[in-house]
Amino acid sequence: NNTTTASIEISAKILGSNYFEGINQNTIQQAIETINKTGLISLNVNSVIDTAEVLRCDVTDNIKPEIINEVFYKTLASLPIAKKYHIDLYNRQNNLGVVYKGSQKTVRDRIIFYDKTLDLVKDKALKSRPYAVNLFNQFKGVVRVESNHSQFKQLNKHFGSRNLSDILKSSAKVNYNVFSRITDKTKDIDLRLFNQFEGMKFNQIRNYLGDKGIIDLCNNDWQSIERFIRTYNKHNHRHYKKSIQTVYNSLNQETKIIDLNIINHIKQLLYAS
Image 1 (cartoon, helix red, strand yellow):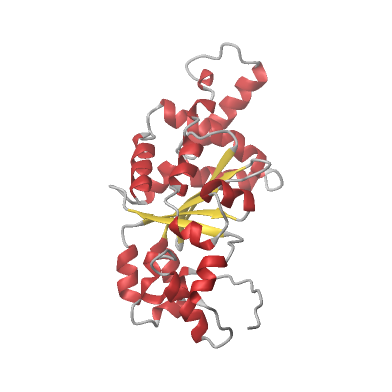
Image 2: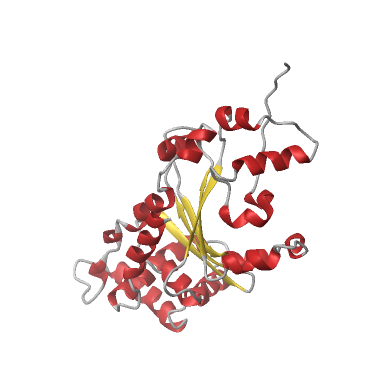
């Protein structure tokens, strides 16, 4: 028999009406058989499952928080997190979600919380499918949690292997672990900035009051704050955004605008997935 190797990138969309389930131990056979039906390649299902190596993958969980609305995502974007991470909030007509990105030099975490229904609405091909309405209803009220793993170190760290069969069988709580790592070190926020300025240099106080003034001007709305920064500092907005976000997160924590119980709530949902 002639054998060869191939690199194949697939999405859970190949599962059609089973898209909500994602590619897992129960659906991998369907995914491979669907590829074979194209006639472009002939794959031995068992051989692929047993011998294939994963080069990169996304790990997804579908969770149903008690409350899910725009405020939920704004709260996620305001959580105090470890300094080696930063947050981006997307609040647009066709994109609602929060992205946490790590700035580590070796393995960089990246995890997204988003409204999948808005993503489905943009998919013109999906609308013509007979299962489209049912699929949309499955994702209704669901927050899609997705972490991206594009490094061999990441895959080995989370699963102990890059073998497809091992990964599919793994019981690792990948998204739970990533989110826990991001939110566990909330003490990185320097609360000395509040109630008193003792120990701070004048320039630090001036910068803090300036950042606080921008936050107040924008009525504590992070989307407006981001727009303000980009409008008046087009070439270096990322640097100042990080500085203002530290003050913004700390202010919200101090005034109890952020419900930190959301961290434990999400962790419980991810662990149960």
